[in-house]
Length: 208
Length: 95
Picture (cartoon, rainbow over the protein chains, first blue to last red):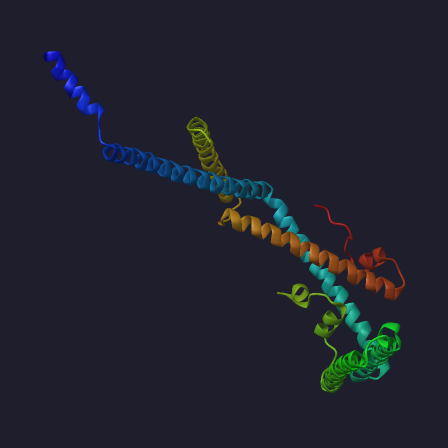
């Protein structure tokens, strides 16, 4: 009978209800999942730290390389001073020669007037003739002639609207140019004017 | 990825990390020594930024200087080299 008692004990272990089995499976599975997410988080932390250290080390290597030849940095500073002096001397020479030319022309205002006139002629051509020709080309094109009267009217309206906008823009530009002439009558030609005309960085050349 | 792959990858990451940390300590030490030697007190980032900014400024001023000298040479109808000679500067730089 001793045999049958131990057997019955084994049997109670063997036949667990499906609900109990499911619970224990869920418990194991959630344990594994927890461990896995912890593992993943640790892995990510390590990867981030590796990336950060690689970046830090690269920066350090570059900085060390620069500091190893630090006398070169001082040499570059000396060369910066050299080229700044060359720029200043060059600008001084060009300012003098430009002022001489301006005086020969009759003064700064006269120079600006001439430039503005040239600019206005350019604008007249751009906004006037060019657009006029484009309109003519469209109205005389075969595609336009093949359109219905309604479509032709619509296209004409669009073209004239565009022309009107262009006229307004031209007017604004002309006013700006007139203002430029008026402003030049009370100012004189300076080093800053020269720098802006030559498209060089005034602050970089004359910084203290 | 199998758990074996994951484990070996993670072990490799740890080895890499340790190696990088050791290099970091050594590089920092080198940087501090050079910092002291050159009598400067700047972060590595700042050292690099200043170096780049110096080079940029040098290039910009040199380009402008050469362009201005060329304008003067055109005006005087002479060679750019002669303009530099007149200004008492050498056209080339020795670094």
